[in-house]
Image 1: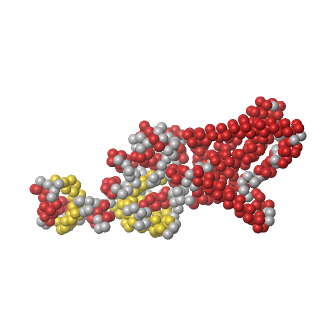
Image 2: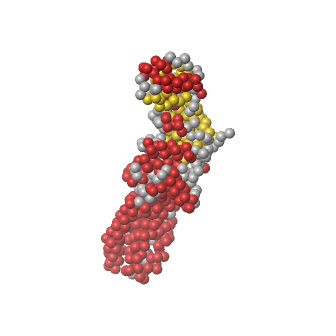
Image 3: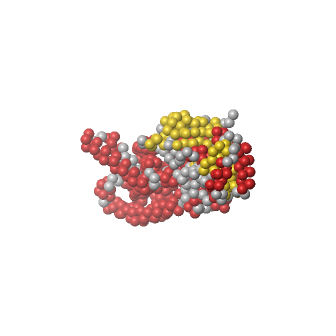
Length: 267
Length: 301
């Protein structure tokens, strides 16, 4: 119950602080740019390329083998852009889950009233809800564009929406969990982001070393969060959930590490 | 028998090779405020942090109100003013206190009422909509004390509650502790021994991470002493005159400037001293039985 209260507070904190509102404004501006100068022109280009037969050659090279199966090109481009952009958004928005509260001592007021794990999971849950809301908003803007451009494909696009939402939420979960972990070790959002980069690069280097030393190992390809993105690009419908277990496992492992650290660390 | 608040057995906390707390065994029961004293680095804040569950022990055993520190069962039962801890400077005081009250299990309405009550108690109801960043240091400290008074905690730990606070606000905090001491036991850590002497009945003395003593603020063994503070009386004349009194065994002057009078019969010695002061028209500012807490703890150092 207290976990939910902390999650709710995390969302309200975003809306009631200047920093939170600036983050939302920044996100809105970035998204407006992505939509105006990325998704819309790209969708128009691929539509043209499709008519000229160019898409048959170009798109598979970009990994978009399921291009034909999308009801609207805007949705297909949104899918690709989101698969690459949202993880970065998740890393940036969820960097300060507990870090500055720890350095300020605010976390001590909370620890007197609830378990450390409740705080850790509550903040994680709050960030998940924030990202889910951002996904809904961005998808909403794309659906509005589709409605304006080609009303015929709207029904089919709406039918794909739940699949897209679930996949994108699953995609960002391990990134938020990673930031939950590093936030426990850091004293500021900036430091947390730095730690995340160090961990990411270290694991990448380790994987490269192991693959060079022992040859290609299938398991190593799935270790880093987002490793399912390449597969998701080739799929377009509910079969994308065939890879749902990967981000869920990533999230559980990262939460286990972060939760253990939160449990043991001095405040 | 009083409720058992804290029970430690061989409690220790190390930071690398440094022992911040070293084998402290201690039992404290509910009642009058308890003073936690000791020089810098004695382990006071470490002990408070261990009791609150902010840090983990390196060895030993500790139980707070029958629970392990950090247990959810202590929510609303144990409260604290941690040293240097601040509320989020960006969010309003009322909103943050309301959230903390809700975490303690209060309903929305009860939380709202209680936030008003604790802010009234620290005389900061006007600041309910202010952000901590807009308040003075003293006001922020009082807000932090207010959060410790939410609900009806059985044990409240205050780490340096009056440090950096101006005298009127320090007095307000002392009055507040006195008023709230009915159902709540306070453990107060401070370097202001005069303050603790007036507030507390039990004193826990730590030094270099070790427990040196636990006892009453009023020490029977120190009752053969009288502490006397005079106003503008020539020292040599007073020492000469007082030394001639048969009721007085020995007379010395403390580092704080008070006279420490040793006697076998403190009542008769007090009367004799009063008579002497009256005869010579010397004015006194304070006369108390026993040694001051400061003299007892640091008198020989």
